Length: 97
Image 1 (tube, helix red, strand yellow):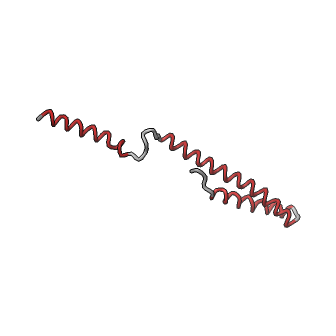
Image 2 (cartoon, rainbow, N blue to C red):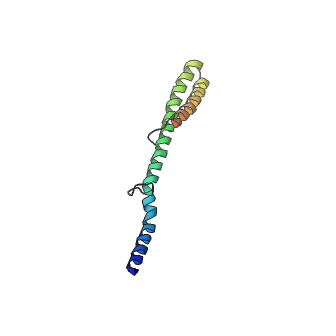
């Protein structure tokens, strides 16, 4: 009888130690560092998309502003508006993250 109680206590203590690991939603090989690297990669990709959108939008807006206004002011206003719109459109687009 004493052997059974000792075995039951050992099994119960082993399960209480292993239960949080078994109940985890992450796979065993998943680490906090991997999650951090993935989040950092996603932030970098989003920042890159926003910067590229701002540059492309700025160039397109400057060309359109120059074509419409035929002046430096039209070019600068078109470039500014195009950069802001290009940045916001590119940031809204979701990549693989």
